[in-house]
Length: 325
Image (cartoon, rainbow, N blue to C red; front, side, top):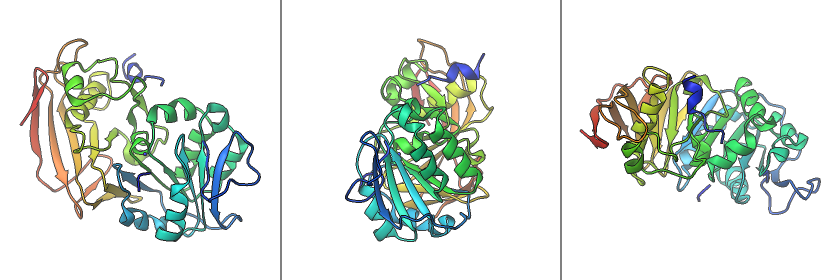
């Protein structure tokens, strides 16, 4: 089931449906919401904060089961700008452990500031950002009640997750896709390509400070572009050693309150640490950048946000736009 100055120079300034077969009766025509489960607010307190970082493709059941204790039997809100209510029955009945699931289709800034949306987020013990288009998430939700609701949920120790586009907007740094996607070859050939648009998180979670995420990782050969993202971040005055997390389809990285993270699912997670940004100039290939990559599979662990890991790493270097070991 498919469901995610200097530093300021990075920023490219780039509804709600809740999950039952029928639309909620109190919903206005412009707010699509699907609801399933108990309509009364669950009077429980979440036990996180916890993160569920999923790489797209078929969802990882084990990852959703992992976050059940953190939501403490409470209410789940699914946010998206397209798609339907597929998560409602899946989370409520297949995964279980929650009181209700509401899917909201938040397709405009007006809807992102709708009091009904703010109320649902304020009562959620878990929030999940479905796949779709991260450019619409940033354009519609930045600086709105949705962004404030996500940040408030983190502070009250809720469980928060995302897949694909929903994953992309959770790290401190974000590939916004404001002008469409970019492939590794394009990014390496010109690290200032017009499609290499970077922004910042909707969540602001300390466990993802200095981190940028990428999804569908091995399936779409995204290592080159992730290294380039890191080089751009560093060369624009970002952290000295930014961290990239490239997550494969059918794979999740689950992160507990103290930053201890584990890989679940059938694919791998690439932990990418930039060692040197090299020459990162407009119109020229990236050259001299160095990074080390640790490949993690199911059962492997690391600690965020610094990416501490006991597994061996492979050194990569970029020479005139070519990534090589």
